Image (cartoon, rainbow, N blue to C red; front, side, top):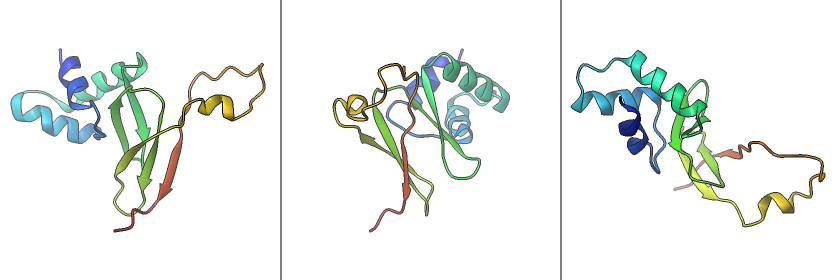
Length: 113
């Protein structure tokens, strides 16, 4: 029931489950946290959303938007996207027998101001 609303919220954004719950609750006051968590799990399992492990136990969700990596600011915990170069996988020079099923590239550091 809330699938499309969650997908729309997570398009080009990085939101935690609690933030998604809070945003949905504004227009849907009867929604429960359990409903949001179940929906996020289903959308992640089907590949519509990507779960990004942030700092500590915090996780963020975004729509699946293709080849990119994530920068995680260790001061603020914010997650930012960065584009991967074209032919990135080929440049890794991996064995031809290795079939990549999933990649998760994260860089941790601090954003200088």
